[in-house]
Length: 258
Image (cartoon, rainbow, N blue to C red; front, side):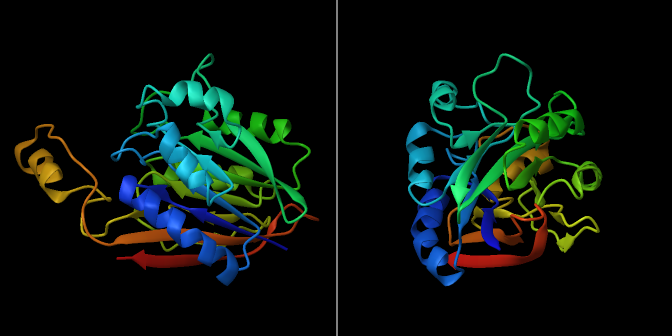
């Protein structure tokens, strides 16, 4: 079995450092073969920079992004040259980077795909069709892990059922709050509606409370920044079977860094 850890959305530079510092010990403790991290909120809560991506990749094997993939200008050229980081596969054609990729882990080839939802989010192409194209493009992979980066739980569940039996894991990101529905679907795909985040639980979805209060109380946009306080790291550990391509088990992993 391959033991693959997927870490939810990393919010801010302190969370990047927390994840990078925590992973060497986690690899040994959990006997990990591979680690995938969603890093789309690494740079101040929106986007990622090459420097922050390299810091994460010093400890993780692969990075997925989301709707903030291109919030930082310097991200675009980096996505063109670094094969260990992917943006959503269903963004409009012609944008830099790739929507899927793979890496070696435990003697097997692990495919990674990110698709972005359409409900309550920016308009993009169908995540269902993009998922099918990605699976075709990853035919040589032993197991495939999907990052379902979407707002609506219903859309993520629909994607999970669409992928059941064709991927080892379909793991939700974007809403930063871990959900209690982690399970193995009948076809052998590990599914959860949201993994959670690596960020401060003392904020609001990892960001400072004051900025969000301006939005909710006064209905106006206000600057928000990653919240101070301890960093909680939410993750899902998937036991994937390279022979079948499915999952044999999945469990939640939580850690807190002061």
